Amino acid sequence: MKKLMVLTLIFTMLLCIAGCKNTNNTEKPHPNIPSDNVVSDLKPNNNTDSQPDNTNKDTSSTDTEANSHRPEKVVKVYGYKSPFVVGEPVKDIFNDAKNGNRLPYTIYFPDGYTPSKKYPVLLYLHGAGSLGTDNQSHLGSVEIMFRHNADFMSQAIVLCPQTPEWWNLDREAYGDQKGTLGSVLHLLEAIQNAYSCDSDRIYVTGLSMGGYATWEILEHYGEIFAAGVPLCGWGNTGNGTAFKDIPIRIYHGTADPTVSFSSSQQMYNSIILAGGDKAELYPIEGAGHDIWSYVYNDRDLFSWMFAQNKKTNPTAKYKYVNYFTIVDAKGKTIISDNDITFTDYLIDRKNGNSAEINIYLTDDGIKKLNKAYSSSNGGRFTVYCLEQAVYTFTATKPIPDDCFVVSGVFNEDTYFEFMETVRKCLN
Picture 1: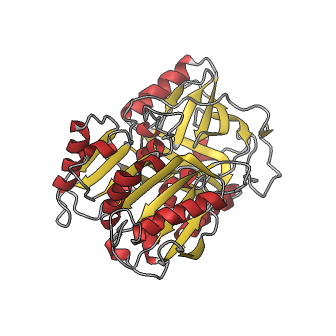
Picture 2: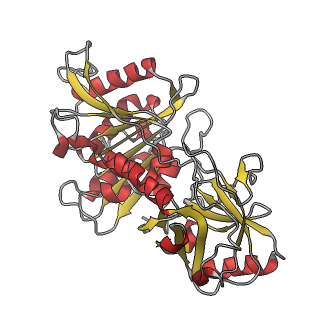
Picture 3: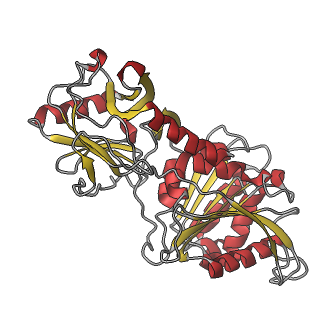
């Protein structure tokens, strides 16, 4: 398992996870640098509803003395809409007419939901520690997903049922779907009938007891799902054939005292022996049972999961979606998440409360950026945050240290506006 390090915020809307690599080792191409959505060259943006409206002006006249030695000069600032918008969750009770079960559930809808668009669906199945009917205690891990990957999550319908008893598909006889996991299938069907869901992009994940339930539902109803992500669970090792065509990422701590790591190892082996080539095992070395806070902030996982599509992606390929990139005028990525070691920020209250973001680079990152600067002949570079253009700058001389500085683009209000968005995800 590739080591992840959760970093502090990059830009107004950036939580950067360094060291998270695409297993296919490919770069995600950037769209062309936008031209028709430029707010204005170095002028404030007047759209206060969704865009920054602050210190977007010529930095040549407003640079602080501390930043006067920086090689970068901002030449264009673009309108930016934060993707970390999470709507208020809806809580309800599903009264299953097919088996009489009552199933509390919470559902999150995409930002700007409209029936004219098809949305992916993420089904989350909680562990035994969240058994109950309060419709709240099972949401902790979902909050982690939103906190670290809200740009993915806020584009999806996220369905979070809660069970007061063990997740079982059947109760009295095989196939009767009278267990609470059977009710989950019925609830999922009802959600698909009521809302605009993309039937080719339905994903399921669960932890511990929910990991078991993920294996159970994939074994018997795998045709529903585009991908599955069981955490520290176990399943039927005698039926690897049932899983061989489903993209599955399996996570388990190697020192798990509750559910042995061998449970996931054996499941993976059974799929491989059955001829499956879309399953991946991610052992988390030395970790115990509660790995979900680690796994569910993994940006690589969400890049992979939301790329899965039963119709258009039969090979389960994906490309890692960076938080942060610097791209040259030809669209080549110069700096990405893997080049960052640490970030912090400063508030310059003497200069209109502008926020200065400091992005510290690896040695290789410094070399790549300086090489690009020196060979650009004054060419332009564009900073992207979550694949949206933030601003364009020019630079020729090398950076004076290991730090790339963002100055004069955001102010204090804009920065903390994002912090408030994150807090809403956690309430």
